Image (cartoon, rainbow, N blue to C red; front, side):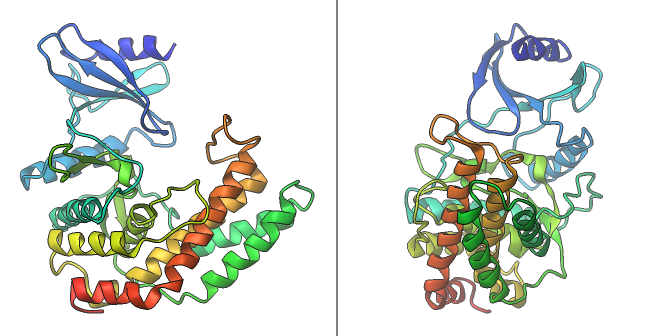
Length: 347
C-alpha cells in the first residue's frame, strides 16, 4: 500500500526510470531511497501528518540559505509543476536530494562528538542572518514547566495504572531535581534545527567529519540553549536511551563543546554560555517527565514490542534512563562547567 503510494508520488517528478528501496532508519516519516536510471539518488518521504505541508516553506527557506553559505544540505526537489511537495490522496509526499554518508545512534568517541559540535555550530552560525517567518512554530516543544505539570497531572489521573507504584516516586524525584536547577536564558530566540540528536547528522565514513544535518521538519525559532541542551543530552550518553544507568560522558561533552566553539566562534552570549549545563540537565529531566507521563497514558511515544511487554514498560525505562542521566551530569556539574569555560571562554 505505502509502496504503491510512493510510486504514485514519483509520477509528479521528472525522474528517468526510478528504482525504490525502503529505508528503515527514522521513526517519523516513511522514507524510500530513489535511484534513477542515470545513477542519481534521492530521498522520497511520506510526511507524517503531525507536520503540516507548510513546513516545506521553512525547509526551502533554510536550505536555500545554507546552500548560499556553502554548507552541504539536502534540498527539496520541485515537482513537474514547481511545487515543493505532492499529494497522493490525503498523504503528503516530498522528494529531497540524497546526501551520501552514514549516521549513528550514539557517539563512539570524543572526536565524533567534536565533529557533531562543529557541524551544529556551523549550522547555527550560518542561519543567524536568515530572515524568515516560520510556518512551523512548534509551540511548547521545550516548555519544561508544562511538561512537568503534565506529568504531575497524569499521576493524579491514573492512580490505578499497574505502573503507578513505580512512576510515583520517579515523578517526585524528577520534579524535585528540576525545581533545584535554576532559570535559563530564554528571552532570545534563534533559528535552530529543533531535533539535533546524533542520528540526524550525516557523517563521512572515511574521515569521521560531519557533513550536514538532516530531518528538517523541526526547523523553528527557539532559545538556542534548549537546542544545545538537547544535543549534548543525545551526544554525551554512550549507552543510548534504553540502557540503565544513564551515563554522562565528560570526554564526549568536552569534545562536543569544543567542536561547537570551533563551528560557531563567539555566537553565544555570556548568559547562554553560562546556561549550557543547566539547559542540558533541564532537557534530560523534561524528557524523563514526558516518558514517565507516557508510561501511564500509553498514547504518544513509540515502543519496541519485541523487547517490552507494553508501551508503558518501555517508556518507564526511558524515563529512568533520562533521570539517571541528569543525576550523572549533576554529579559532575563543576567539571562540566569548567569544560564550558575552557571551550567558550566566558560564562
